[in-house]
Amino acid sequence: MEADGNPTDADDISRAISDINAAAQRLQARLRAHRSHEEGLKAASDRLAAQEQQLAQKQKDLQALQESVNEQ
Image (cartoon, one colour):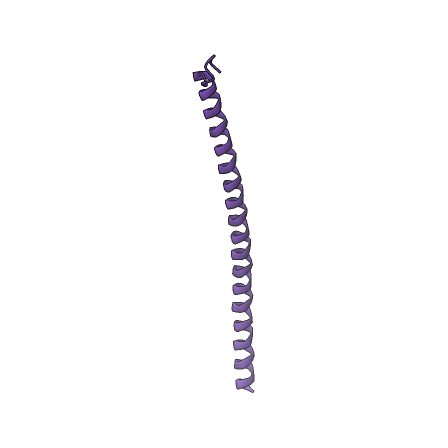
């Protein structure tokens, strides 16, 4: 601080660095939240794909059963 109470260039630079660090921390938190959300979506997508495969298999099984019944 200068004698007249005004901040020095060093004070301004220090404040700017603090502001930049705080902004970087906020961005990192947002990025972590985004990644967590992406991981959740990926897990949901994987579960859906597995359910689709199970459904396709059940449809094949039902079709085979229907054909078997029709042959009798």
